Image 1 (tube, protein in one colour):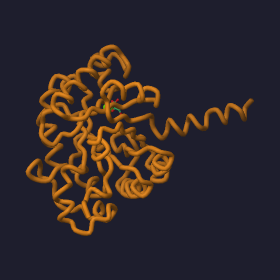
Image 2: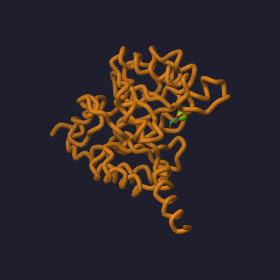
Image 3: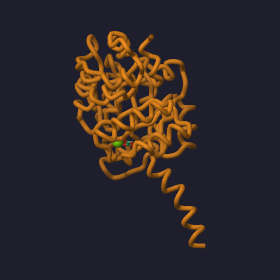
Length: 259
Ligand code: 3PY
Ligand code: MG
């Protein structure tokens, strides 16, 4: 059995599909599962700004896979030890925030990919169990292709180094954090993920990814923005957040109750 049977994220991207991911910070495996069952083909577990601990992350990755979707983990800043742990739990993609230099990109790849690309340590027991891979040698042979590394470009420094980061072997995607990028590009003056400066940077980052043969991704606050940006060269788009979806569902109900 090919190891790729249980993995969908890398396969969808390489097939040219646009992947929309739900974005979960609430640390609830059931909420993460619901987003998959409602139709997202990928669900991101945000450990950087979300509330997730290890136990909830392990449970969510299983629930998301059983719902037929791919899980992605955004690690906390510089927490490269969590990269291989999350992959061992069965995550299909890892988002690393604030990858600003080639050294950052190399440290990320070292944790995420097996030799010769990196030096990921062996132990994918839950990942192979979830994917139904009986022979772990199959996983070793295919893991570097199955798992997707997403380097976040969201600072002035990262933007200056974007071509070299994109060209780093083992980095599969440049993923833009437009809020941090807006703050960085204005030296802290403005939070505006849709500013003219950010939009210009977005185009530059898509071009850098394309030149290096890598994918480009973007965080979007709404589905409308995600659909629009899919037409601008982004193949991976994060949409809103679980908390936002919850509030959007509750708010009109409460308004009706209050008359
Ligand atoms: C940003 O916009 O800075 C992000 O990290 C998106 O989650
Ligand atoms: Mg950010």
